[in-house]
Length: 285
Ligand SMILES: [Fe+2]
Ligand SMILES: [Fe+2]
Image (tube, rainbow, N blue to C red; front, side, top):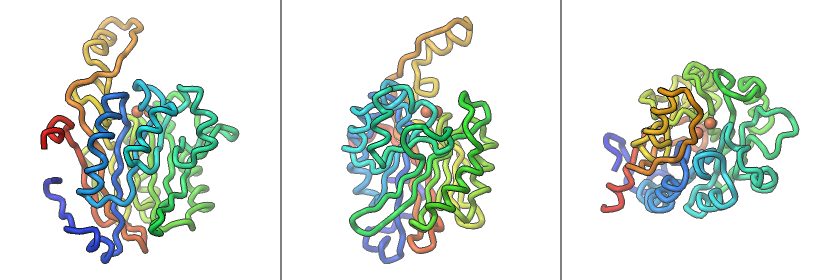
């Protein structure tokens, strides 16, 4: 169970309170993480009465990019919406898939003409809805994307009427840029969270106007690694300053992210809790 998190005992009570519970998982790192998602997410959704499950898939295929197989595995495990980031373009087959799969989104602020979309209007048969937005930072990032602040502003103007529940994945390197996005959207988004750096931060909170915020969810994948890659190889790379081929590590796999309770009517977040599940612990439970 989630230590310290006050969980209403049944979904009935959550619904009575008009709360929607959202599970959001950080960057899914290669095969070890996909396996953990497959094995843990279905039961986690039941135990925690999850209404909507989201994961960042930019590293799902071999640690770099996402392909049809890896996206399909995550959807089959019960993830409803996949966001991504700068690595989304690694596997060429994903270009056309992005145009046909509305529940896999890429950062919205790539130049006009990029495949796919940066937002998803998610609608559950029960009537629950959420607007999920993916945006990419510019500080210390390799791509020269458009201004994420003006871009998210424009998306909220165009699509904000779809649902009171607005969830924003800010895929960025700099903590300052992610923090600024949280404050920029406070009161206009239900959740703003960071991805890309793969290290979970401890600043989860609800901002004064009702936006749940955390600077980085942390990766899903090998915890005994350097941001998901085999640590020995990365250390050698830092010491030699010579090019290295990195491989996804496999040891001590975790799922990391947040669970957020959101008022369905107002869109305000009521609770946020960080999540770190060790796959091996769960496998025996
Ligand atoms: Fe990543
Ligand atoms: Fe990234």
